[in-house]
Amino acid sequence: MPSVQAKQFSRQVPTLLHFLRRETDRLDWPANETEWQAFARLCEYHQVTPFVFCQLKATENGPPAGLLEYLRRRFYEISARNYRLAQEAVDLASLLQEQGIPVLAYKGPAVAMAAYGNLALRQFQDIDLVIRDRDLSKTMDLLTHRGFDLAPHSCQPDNPKDVSRSHEATLSAPDKTFFIDLHWRLAPEQAQAFCPDIEKMWDRIETIRLPQGNVDTFCREDLFVALCCHGAVHRWGRLKWLLDVAEILRDPAGLNWDRIETMTFECPLARSAISLAVLLSADLLHAPMPVALPIEVQAAERVRVVATAISAELFTRGHTTGNNHTALLGLEGSIASWIDYLWVRYPKWFFEHAIVRIDAKDRALISLPQQLDFLYYIIRPIRLVGKHSIRAARLAELSTRR
Image 1 (tube, rainbow, N blue to C red):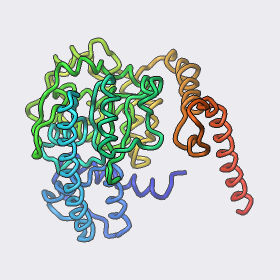
Image 2: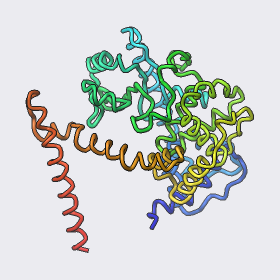
Image 3: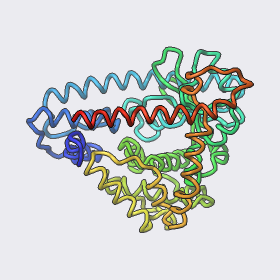
Image 4: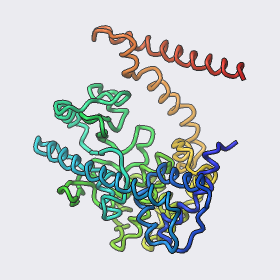
């Protein structure tokens, strides 16, 4: 049974899509305060509040005063944070480059300028930077010296196995008001097949101008491909990610599709991720379908099946399930890939994350000297069994009380 929130969200999806499509015709706003509050929550969930607020000003009839005031307040709050984070990104990039560490701005302010031409229109929470994995240790030393702390449950950069399995490390700012995601790859291990070789992307970088200064980032085509792969990996769980794609497709400057085809020649699954993004942005957000779209990037039947399932989830729940495994396996489109996932990749992932990977909670339970670190591999399964046993017991107790 859908939850109450899911029902409220699903009723507001057509209205939200109306604004994300840049449509300006008249809307019949609900008089019920609960309904427009649900619309505001849906905007926040999909992180598109600034864009929606700016679109409201072009509509023939305005929303209820309470909703308009809420969206206006959030627009200015988000805008102020965006400008602050953009300044932080420029400062951090300059710091690393001064120390001989090449760095790229990724997502956040880079996408805001590339897709919207305005820092205020794209909501972002953190700073995403891309470095080479060989520079990870030096980068971590510089940032920790500046007061940044490795976030709990993040990849452990001093553990080579952890670095080889992961694609990013997260650090919290000295004042704890934002995080930095340091990327050395574009996707986790199980989704690497959907991302082109990031090392080759370094050969095509461009400089983008922010109000706070210049930063290097991926070239426009690489950025577009990276956004498509990121959305597919997360089953397009936020409409913000799809809006990024749609806004780039709406840009008259366009994309060099011959270049994209060449870049993805060695990565066929990246083409599936791109075709899924283009299809969803055309169907849901009415983005223009590129005339020059190569045949290899046009949607195959398996891609259309995944797109249909994602759209159905959005209209039923107000958002997708976020189950990246089903999205990626659907794009692969073969029984062999499902067998590989069920019998090889998932058991391997479970073993590594449930047994092999030691995190801050294990170390917080008991502090051991470095020479006894191996004991954590015994302590971790015991801790997890105890944790889930207690949780199951509490659930059982609640059921009997009812």
